[in-house]
Image 1 (spheres, each protein chain N blue to C red):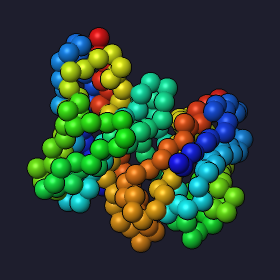
Image 2 (cartoon, each protein chain N blue to C red):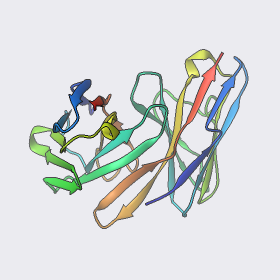
Image 3 (spheres, rainbow over the protein chains, first blue to last red):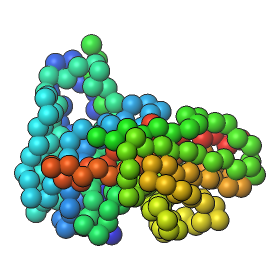
Image 4 (cartoon, rainbow over the protein chains, first blue to last red):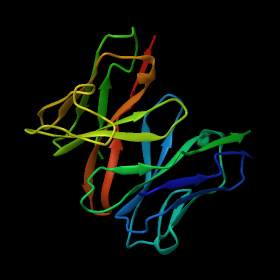
Length: 114
Length: 116
């Protein structure tokens, strides 16, 4: 069974520092990996999608890498801002037969202090 | 991207009652998905809803407890039946969108349910 782990569970940094969030998964037979942001009591906002054949994706200050063979993905957020405070979730879709069946990690709660 | 709305956004319900949550998408989609997020936990898939067929439930979830309707390609409902405090969660619907970069999932804003 696929297990997705996110480390650390919580992170607090001063504004301007770079954020590094880690996601690991036990079964490397994934179709894709997706990073989401969740604000308190709200739904999920998709940040980045990485296909299994890709090594990284970038959007603005966000960069996500994927090392499928070692079962790891890292989300980098450059020059953090207080507005980046949220919970960040990674999720993997195992195979093309598992449409929509995302396996989520427990999330990393990020606080960026002014 | 897909824009998803849910109703209600939140509700407080009494034990033993039922609540129906609506999910509306701004475009036609083949499959819609219902997730549950219990307090302090991550998301767990409840079921997949296809238009014109019965929903497919994940292990640990049953139709009698979580009946789902999918009357057309833009709408679905999830009912939480005979509620107990353990059903207090955020319920989210999601859809897949096929993009050049791959298959991406989008989520609604969620329905926060509190059962007293």
